[in-house]
Image 1: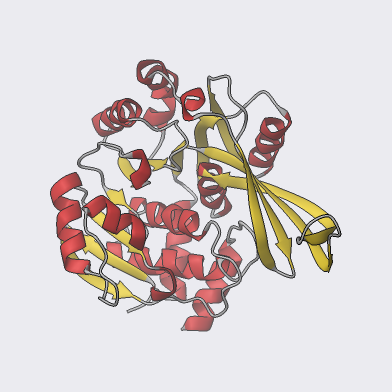
Image 2: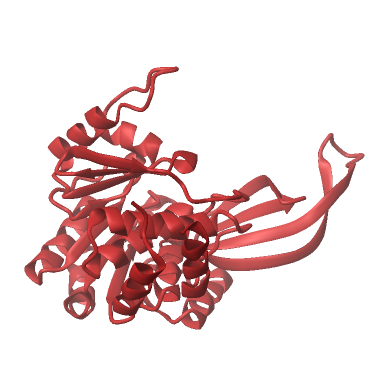
Length: 329
């Protein structure tokens, strides 16, 4: 089974009436595009002749612009510094139709700079403050977000382990969302060791799923899907778990039981940066629109298949998604 163009169109129509709140580590993605034709006389490193610079939303901000790009109304709560990068990210979010709800703090806006040479990433440079700079008081955040939570259809936690998402903040926002009957999803980072229970959706990648399940991968042994899904359900009690498997597609699980694995729809893979954000955004949108898990996964898988065919952190438009689904039919 895969999603048909008619079902995708119906989902996209429903998505246009949704309102989504994203909470997490927002960042500015900076790309330096150039070429390297010589080695520096100062050290055995390539000299990059820079052709251009581009900037886009990264991290939780990328989840937000993916949501807005498919027609839903979206707000994002995350740390934006009082600096040039923060102003750039605010401008990008505003241009994409995303409402920025800034958290307080005194750190710098997180910036990831990727140096791209001949369509390949040469290196990445990160600028960020210590994690404590991004932490917020859960009670204050809860009060600040009360209206946004009441008005939203789903809350999405996008964790990049930078310091914003803490046990207290996740618990406070989840409790408020649950009291209003809202869908709650999390893209986790095991490094952050968040404590949470009873969410609607969790979307780790293969490595993260193993770490969260406390299962050590064995060399040459296939991914232990059944054991991972069972352990994740025991530990976190999440209704749905979707494990993104990269080139192997997506593993779907409900109530700790494996449903199936669906293959990737990507034809060409240029850059996987942000593909997990796209998958998360589309899964939440589809499930909140009333789709079943399998239909939602096919919808998200198709969207991710478009994004990995682009260089750099990217989003997918409704037309691109429908064209891709039509080509697969």
